[in-house]
Amino acid sequence: MDSFEWNKIFGAVLGTGLLVFALKIVAGGLFHGEPPEKPGFAIAVAEAGTAEAGAPAVADASIGTRLAKADVAKGQAGAKACAACHDFTKGGPDKVGPNLYGVVGRPMDGDGKFAYSEGMKAMAGQNWDYDHLDHWLKSPKDMVKGTKMAFGGISNAQNRADVIAYLASLSDSPVPFPAP
Image 1 (tube, rainbow, N blue to C red):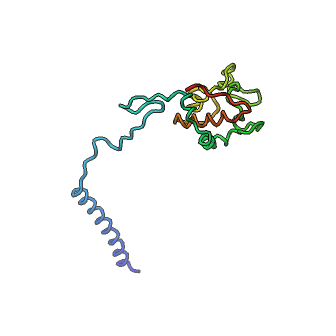
Image 2: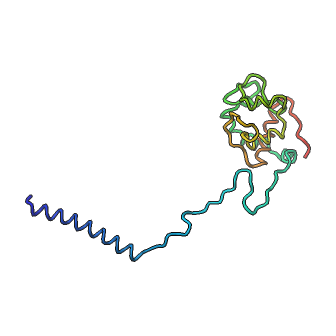
Image 3: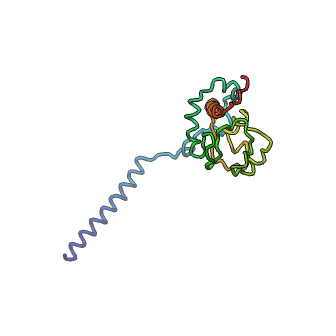
């Protein structure tokens, strides 16, 4: 190839670059858009544990009322996520979390077999009743600061009651539900 051929190739590349640059300038002048006053989209998300702006806060019905309507089968289905860390069988092993058979009425600081966090050990003298279980399943980290349980909680009150009803059924002598 002689130098004339190379000049034609470089000229074509340079001409194409100049044409693209010129088209960009012309298109920018023809199709000029104003920037938005507020960039992006506002995404309204209610804070955890708070009502949305302008909506009145709705208190959960009492645990007794919710347990009266609870469905053990739904609770068993809801507790499947818990099976990754907990065992539900009588005499079953502790896993990442303690065995949950007979948890209702059991001491909160355990039976000495499971290595509870310092926060749970501080709950010594208290038992797992329905109110404590409800609060725990809503937000473990709010109930016991420093807990090792990495579970975000169940926000739906009736779903919590279903799981609690299932846990209550896992006992040789189930603790009666509180009055509605």
